[in-house]
Amino acid sequence: MKKRTVCVIFCHIMVLIPGETIGSYLCEEIMSCTETARNSTGNAINDALQQFIWETGNVDWLKFNITKKEKHFINSLIGTLHHRRKRQVNTTVRTRREYRMLSHTERFNFHSAIKNMKTSGQYDMLANIHRGIVVTSAHGGSNFPGWHRVYLLLFEEALVRINPTLSIPYWDSTMDFDMDNPSNSIVWSASFFGNGDGFVTSGPFANWMTPVGRLTRNIGASGSLFSKQSIRSLLSLCRTRDILDPTAQPQFNLDLIQGGIHVWVGGQMSGLNTAAYDPVFLLHHAFVDLIWELFRRRQEQYCGVDPASDYPSSVGMHAPERMMTGFTTYRNIDGYSNFWTRFIFRYAPSPSCSTARSFCDSLYLNCDTSRQRCISLSRTRLGESGTNFASMLRARAEESTLNIGPRFRSPPSERRTQDFQMRRRRSGFNLIGTSSNPRSIQSIMRAHAQVASINVGPRFAAPPSEPRTQEARFGFLSRRF
Image (cartoon, rainbow, N blue to C red; front, top):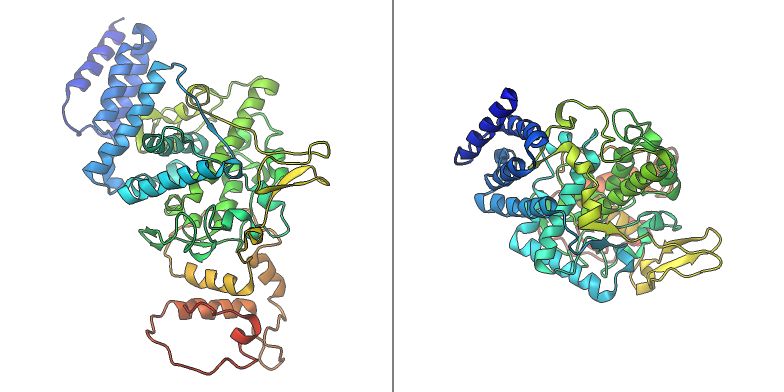
């Protein structure tokens, strides 16, 4: 009794401390204390303290290098989420659907809201969070899926303030993986993500600037998209520790497998500190979250496991009771709560088809009846050119202008990626066609990437390239670097 009374008094004293001077250690002490108090005295004290914590911005914001205005905006989003969680009422539950299942109007509205956030600075405010300490506190351990679930919800709350009908769509990249050439998927057209071959110059996010340079991609260079087989394997397990670091086997490791998609997209998406500056990040992680949600449903229905409490034993930054980096209203384990998909959002199933039902309910998907699955249309169906040697070299060169820092871990690159093909061709691949001067595709890419980093200014006028040059033989350099 005395211990509880002391705890309650301590909590009340902490609430009275003004300003933003409480450090993360004291914050953790408060939360630990209030949890004890709540168990004995109800939710009132905990609710008051939660409100206090997000309003005072109890985050080491210096690590995020953001302004007071930005801090206030992010805290207001956290506050909205907290208010909905505190009330736990059945307000409108948002539904996240596959990107290609949106109508033209719905897709336009989503793109418009994202561009609105970019113009106002809100997009970069939120993207700035996914860097620095987050690289270790929200990756490589038990906190990975829960932290990213809360992070997506903040983006979604910001979108809803612009247009209440919106939710974040997800990008089911298995429907691209099943194509002959995933790089030609319709999602890399101007109607969806925009081009994926170098600087993004088409689509809704064309000519975006990021802290490390122009928004850039290099799709299909390395890494791998999600495959249906990799997801089936992951969903065959029952315990969260079996799909997350440090205990998961590589073929079941959700954090590792999803890193392959980051690397496959390339550019900013391939860097741990820069990935969130590309809106592809949001739709990719919505799909990662959907996979986790399918895993959680299986835990409940077939494994007899409560997903909300199946937080793997962890210490340090991934400890269950540690405050979430950037979102100290919540503990790491709060990301595992069933509340989010019960009261805030849910997922529509990914498109499917069969021999009996040979359509996918989307103009942008085809039913492969031989495999009974939906696959993405090629962007060539919209009159856009597919991936070619020229665009591949351009993407490599333009990606080389970025300093993205540490890259995501990834499974080995799948066989259709450029890196896999280069490894096969490295010995004896003769691009010029003479034994006296063999040039590998790798060396040509390297040379053009290095040339692209030089600002030479105006170029000499010249006659048409002669037949043995790279430009004449392969049609690249149609766009000068």
